[in-house]
Length: 196
Length: 253
Image 1 (cartoon, rainbow over the protein chains, first blue to last red):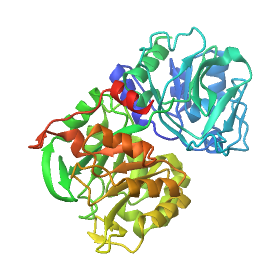
Image 2: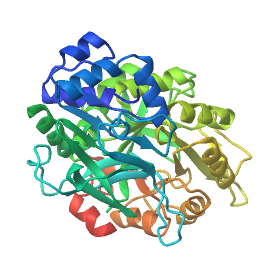
Image 3: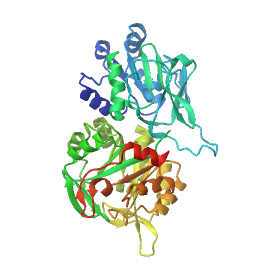
Image 4: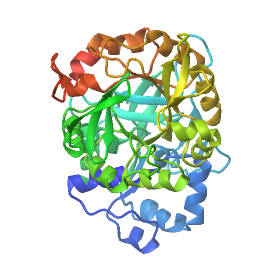
């Protein structure tokens, strides 16, 4: 599912053992999980179903509370549903995925939201506690996540509207931006996740 | 706030990097691995790596070299040159390439753009248009792999490519290439007003205010340049540079 090469590159640079896998045993044995994803919502969900890894993901993430980081579409899959597709999401966080809608003249904004942007951290947490002052992150997405409860919002970003650019529910964390493409700023995010 | 992107463009020829003037006279400027390492340290917004030889020679992308080049590039890297199949694209994304750039092959096979965007999403595909003025001063698309101009005008072609699912349009002026006298702002403006997707301006940047103009006057979402980031001084000594983030911020906020 999507572009995993760059995540592998950065994790190798950080110096951890990384396996790109859809194998149940390997997922079972993992200390941390990362769910990347570029592509469409339904494509992502049907991949998870076809690979038959939903039960093992449920037992690792929901029952064992293994930390999992969803990146971009990976994070959107954690929500209940998306305007992009018909299939239900994983529903691990009470949130929905909506499409940017900038039809009004006043916006004059392109879709996708593509490029470097900043985040506003909304709560104390273990993912952004060591960030640099000048931190910036690489985004590329046409859909954004909206949490129902504020306590699931880790950070927000401004693009026409203020959307939820990082979300959390206990061991489940998601970032709309790509830490693996965000220089030392994103590297810190991945390092912090690995230290949980 | 979203910042306009500033993107160095590196031209790969064989195993080395070159820089051209008006798409001719490639001058060797160094080792690609080394250059990308330096650009990574300078925390560039994005990189575009174009192999200028493989399509001409009808060869596939140099996957191993590309892999080596970008294994320590922690920013989005777009690659173009010799991509002719979904498998080529898949292999490049697997290596860690963020976007693929399609030029000549998209002119001959517009439906390939649709195929790639259906499979990988339109954010993964950049269509590159090389525009060259004909003797009447009108822009036509230049197919660099075959070194001839096509009947399409760049604006019509950009629109077709957008309809096919391109995520970005990379517009390069052949006449301005390597000149460092500034972008063709009219060309950039005409393209960015005709499509809804982001436009990457290229060809002619020589100074920081050129980058600013491409965005503020041309309406580009990104300003790309070759010579400006690899040459220094009037004798064009090879020196890799990139504007400081503070300078970029001041320019766009």
